[in-house]
Each structure stands twice: as structure tokens, then as C-alpha cells.
Length: 169
Image 1 (cartoon, rainbow, N blue to C red):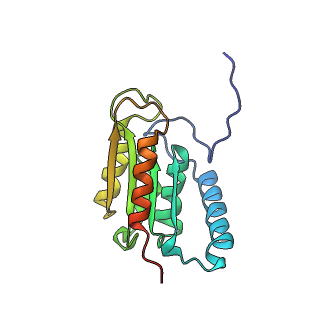
Image 2 (image 1 turned 30 degrees about the horizontal axis):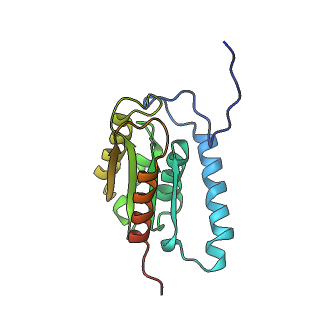
């Protein structure tokens, strides 16, 4: 069997909900993204509550860590075909209801068993755990979707972004 190196946001021992997060690499990239946003967005005059962070798959997991742990005043977080480990450090955050005054969490996932990398049940579990912690949000499914993004999904995400950003001051 031939293995190839893969560039991902943070290390994972395996793609499974029961595998703990690799805290060291997740924390490192989380702070890198946070510092980048601070330097190139917030420091240019855009307030944190006018920022939405998001991503696809592992990028969505990273966005949830940034938005729910490191930059808790962002306007919203989107996570497409994404997941958190069942023992994620996000689930330990206190006062989750103080997060996200406008949009909350927006997720999109496959409806069927076609996406074998991140099954719908894993995404739904992540969403439900965050909802139990007080995160407002939307969980959408789309039928017959592999581990990919579709035009319909992106159009609906665009609409959500426009709805959740606060009005300009």
C-alpha cells in the first residue's frame, strides 16, 4: 500500500469521532488563524462581531475552534461537511450562550451515506452537542452529496452570511 503526505489544518490520528483531538497542532493553527484575523482584519478597523469564520471538513472544525474558543465575539461560524471529536475541547467551554450575537452556527451535511469520510451522523452529533451548550444554529442536509460542496449549498451559505452580519454602523 502506498501512502502520500496530506496537507491538512491540524494532525489527526484517524478520522473518527472517538479519536481525541491532537491538541498541540490544533491549538497552534487556531492561534495562527486568530492572529492572522487580528492583524489583517480587526486591526484594519473591522470589529470582531462583523467577522464570520468557516470552512469545509477539517477547515470547519478549525473554524469552530476559532469561533467558539478563541474569538468568541465573531458574528458566526459555518462548518460544511464538518465535525468535532466526541471529546472536543470546545465542549468544555463555559458560557457558550454569550457567543455569536447574530448568526450562530451554520452547518451543511450530506443526507445519505454517500459521504463515508464524515458521515451525516457525526455532523449531526456535533451540531446537537453545541446546541445543548447554548449555540443557536442551523443544520441543513443535501441529498446525494459526496464529501464535497455543491452550488446550492454555497448559495444558501451566501444568504445566511448576508442575514447574520450586523448592519453597518
